[in-house]
Image: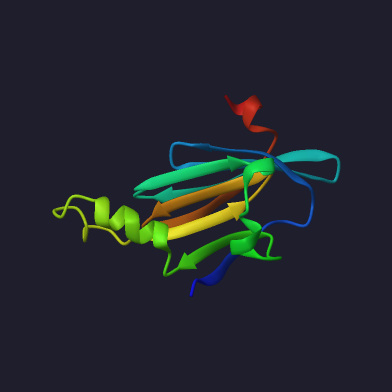
Length: 126
């Protein structure tokens, strides 16, 4: 049976425009009349997968929780671990992280961290 650990709850204000860029999941929130850049950085990424909102069933995994979860005993994590060259398998931990922001984002990585909010949008920063 798959167990899910709740790790980070998304802000209550509207969240949108999410995309995964290398090892960082970037998204915006809107509060008090301004946009804020938000991001979650994943460390030692082994695999990623994304789906647009109309093609995902991530709700079956995360349930009603609106945020980042760890999928414990994940078949996908085990598949990635099995496919990893033996000399690399135990160098880093492998966790299956999942989040639903206008679609699903799933990452196999050693760990994650929430980056500080910044006023503005990611497009303005680029």
